[in-house]
Image (cartoon, rainbow, N blue to C red):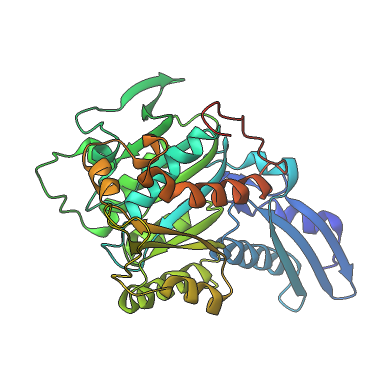
Length: 368
C-alpha cells in the first residue's frame, strides 16, 4: 500500500487518547508527520506526562500505522506531554495547576505533619490550595485540620454528583477518613483502596487551585502506582528523618519516582526532626536522630534539599488539637516551617503551570 497522508490520517484517527476518550486527530494531538522513503516519523502529544502513558501511546500509534501501511514500513514515534495552552484539554483536574505528592520511604517520619503545615503555610501566602489525604489505611488529616466530625457535601451538576471538599484554614480537603468510622480500621484490598482514592480526585469539585498536595501512605506500593497512573503529578517531595534507617527508605522513595515507568520529578527532600532544642536551653541543638542524613542524601542524588524542620513539642501538640503549627504566629513551632514554606513557594511560583503560564500568588496580609 502506498504511503499517503490520507492513509496515515485514517490510521491515526483510530488511536484514542485514553484520558480524553477521543481520537488524537480529532483532538489535534498529531503535531508532525514526515515520510522519508519507507519510514514514517510521527510526533504526537498525550495528556498524561508519565512514561507509562507515553509508551502506550507510542505502541498504539505504531500498531495502527503498520496495520494500515504494511508491516514492512518503519515507524518512528515521538510522544510529548501536552504543552502551552493545549494542556487545558487535560481531563483529570484540568483547573489544578500543580499536583504534588508528599511521600516517605517509611512511616513515623512526620510526613502528614509536614504536608498539613505546608498546605496551610502556602494558603497563608495567597496560593489556592487543595489537599488529598491519600493515606488510605491511616488517614490523619481530618484530625489535623479539626474537621474530624465533618462530612463533605454533594452537589449535582448536569446529572452528575460531585463531592464538595471540606475547607478549613484556607485549604480544601478530602480524606478517606471522612467516609469511614474513625474508630474502625479500614480493611480494604489494593484495588478497592485505589478505586476509592481515585474518586477523591475525579469525582470531586475542586475548582481552580494553584497547587494540590497529596499525602501518600508510607512506602512504595499499590496506592503509589495507581496514583501515578491515574493522576498527572507535577512532582514529588520526599520526607525523611536524619537517621540512617529512614534515609535508606527515603532513597527508595526517590528511586520510585525516578523509575522510567513512573518518571515524576522529585522536587526536593525535607529533613524532619532534624534536631531538638529544649525550651529552657534555646541555644542548644541535640541531634537525637543523627545529623544531616537527609541533606547528605539530597546531595548524593543531586536532588534539591528543601529545608530542615526541627523537633518541637508544640508542633505535635498543635497537630493533635487540629490547628497546624504555622498558624501560631511568631513562635518556635511556626518558625520551624517557615524555610520549607518559603522554599516551596519559590518552587511553585517558578514552575511553569500546565497552561504554560506561571503562578502569581496574591500577597498575604499576614506575611511580609
